[in-house]
Image (cartoon, rainbow, N blue to C red; front, top):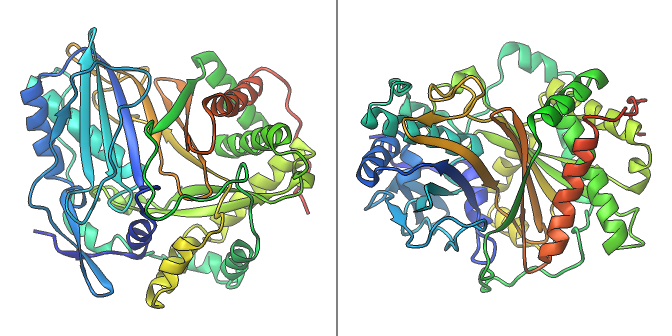
Length: 453
């Protein structure tokens, strides 16, 4: 057995940042046409969780040290009596001190089934949760004898012992060697600049609870033609899809704030952008956090010229990758963890860390043996039609956007804090973003003209 294992800095950060009013919980809703055999799905769950030890673990604290230990019970599926609805079912936060960091909730009706995966971010990142989801569906397909079923991919649980280490191969080390202060400069900007929340508000107290409609979210999808157009636009401009989406989100946030928070155009807006640290060496790793965060700051003057804004985002992201700066935040957390009380004070500070979060998970289930030529997952009489993806929210960051592609369509989810944003304001936000992205698929775009000074 691989457990017990000590928590690594990113896991400890997610655990420390967790609180009743702002749980560090990720949510994925998988929406199927068709119904599951409940007994077979429960059996498939047992198979899937046996492959991912951190999803069946609890945290035991001894002084300043925290350790993953096996839980007394494994996750089970809670079936709701009500059928699927547009809103997600009400969910309680996960408590890693008493129960494992994975919960499944399901409901069925009118020939449809929703399965909600809820995971604590201390256990794994979004890609890790989808690796588990694929194992769950594959195990179910094997149990049902689906023609497209294939053996589960081999995993190497012993790799979990290395999950907190940031390896630098010779070529990567030589790339960052000429820029030893680049990470420190970035950390200084992160600490010295004070980004503004999307709208002025106060963080909830440590004893406050979640709103009744938690989790509040909205999902939008482009059609296949629009998606092809957006990909073509990014290619024509010589930028990545992620660069283009970040540009459109900055402009959407700025435009929205002009209407709702006038007179603050020169305040710093900051996007927190999770960055995967996965390499080929992580192919056999069970669900875990192999991720860092980069922070992109812009003011009104930086947003005036969309072409220059796009160029600045492209150049900044290329510089982060070229200089190996992606793990800077994880290294920073490692330093904080060694200094008693520093991580706790940072997490509890009444300070906005980012205006919004933007996560791009790429093409989902692209390598799943159950996917057809269009990338749609199916088995026998079950077809995965849609998804909703919700990262956690933290104090003074009331909006978290996720982008992904599935079955040839680019999709977006907004997870928002309903204590801060009204439902119509949230709709205005995500509809504004989707409209901007959709327009980029059919309208000429300004070419990047150089970085913003």
